[in-house]
Image 1 (tube, rainbow, N blue to C red):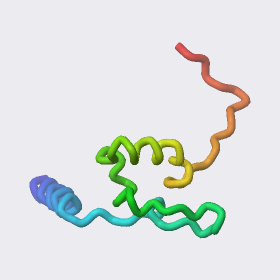
Image 2 (image 1 turned 180 degrees about the horizontal axis):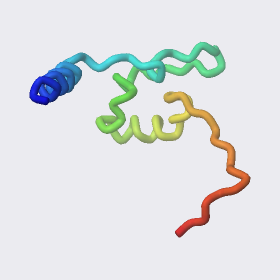
Image 3 (image 1 turned 180 degrees about the vertical axis):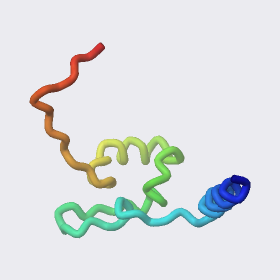
Length: 81
């Protein structure tokens, strides 16, 4: 049990000490129609540290920055409580 806790602790600490990775969301768009300059945003996954100017531009274009997909409505939705 102690060994498992020690291994889990090591993995958590090691992952927290690593450099932020560039995820697919940070990659440049492949289509020329969608190509925009997001270089002023730094690491795009760091939304909490965006300046107010970055927030205005970023939140309006969040579907271009991060991969999104529509979710279709269910034929049999659950009722709200």
